[in-house]
Amino acid sequence: MCERIRVLFLDRDGTINKDLGTYVASREDFVLIERADEAIASARAAGFRIVIITNQAGIARGIVTPGQVEDVNLYLNELLAQKETFFDRCYYCPSHPKYPHPEYDRFIDCRKPSPRMVEKAIEDFRAEGLEVDLGGSFFIGDKMIDVECGQRAGLRPILVRTGHNEEAICLEHGVLPEHVADDLYQAVAGYILPSASR
Image 1 (cartoon, rainbow, N blue to C red):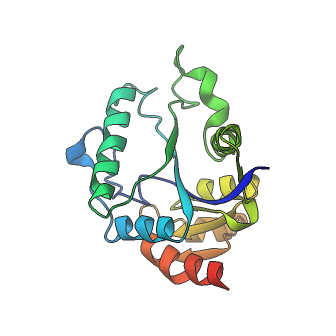
Image 2 (cartoon, rainbow, N blue to C red):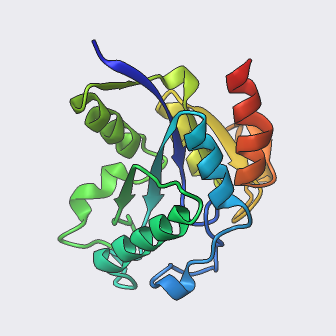
């Protein structure tokens, strides 16, 4: 019998950390959005697993390396440790359709809005005897592709107004999130946790 878990799937740049308009290549470039760490700590305390799902096409473009992306993710967990929390997994897509790369083109089908990275996370949890409760799990991001990815994966999508804040674009294309929040903290504390307790 698998244990059922709820998961908070999170975009990274523009949702957890400030989007600086370029790829985050170093720890110095990585600046947490206010109270994002508190949001993650609160979600974990409420029983959610935390999984990051992020497009990192700067790798295919030669702007950042996989090692730099992974070091930034390590740094994020070091920052989260200050709030006595952490994320469980991070999946990133290194590909970009406009920047062919012999090493990374094979991952192009994983690029959001494809739900492939979410599906991989679900498979990996299942291999550990954990079944993701899709109806009780959320996907939070700052772009329409995050909302669409969450929808296609069967999750409950939330759009945040930080980062690219594509609220108008979502409306224009009819890709509607379940909820729109000012930032990650408001999404978790103001919407997810109250709805989870009902």
